Image (tube, rainbow, N blue to C red):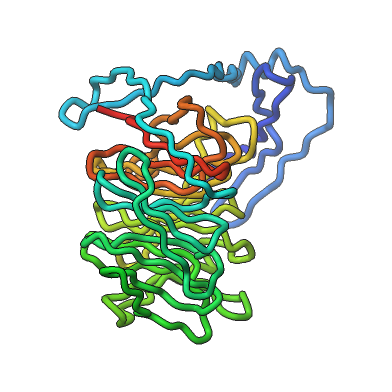
Length: 346
């Protein structure tokens, strides 16, 4: 039995107009052989082809900058409403460059930047305490345990330090690896991004106390390792989320380290500058919040990587570190030294 096959090429005939599908070649196929059809090259009649194959009109996209965000309630997914992000507090931290913020309640939070001091502020933005790093160099990252104690990475010493009851305690020391970012899970375990001394390998390691429990993600396949600007968090479904500034992507894996998805920005609402993910956090709805430093906004995606909306307005200026408190208020560390608390949903 003879069958005919058509090879079709899709070509955009005019800019911002329509697509036309052209027949590239035809061949006949039988069980015993295939025979190429012979054609004489002639000028293509575009009008006739459009009648035969039709055309695709471009999808209209309108970019409109607004500070309103759309939220959907969990009980009624189809019921959407508009909510305006509201600035609750704006704190001048005293850091010339601010990178990180961490908290585990709405009563106090810690902040760090290009300074050897790590500062603690109350919910109204008043300074409560300040701690110097052991090395005198600013920390790579900070976190807060479920009991409210400060953890920080002393990069020059390759150590994780715990500040408890006013006393410092070194809980982890690395030899051939350099700790880069840290997060405390709901089970009070530590997730640490680290890279090798020769900067050829990068991985995430899970610790229970001072003991290595699992090295569950080698990031060579999913994340580039040339740039050492990465942030990490855990979602409520135990997914691990890593923001990688250099490759403009957020990579999410499950608890075992199996790849789930890669978010590289919402294509139909792209901003003026390339996506530049820095800080990352999650909330009680398992939404993932990503600081887009170059575009002065926060991306919100669901637990499966679907873009939901932006948080804009509130005077956001180069947001970097992120943290969500117990009341689902968003804390934003801006590189200009200001730390903002924002109410972004009901």
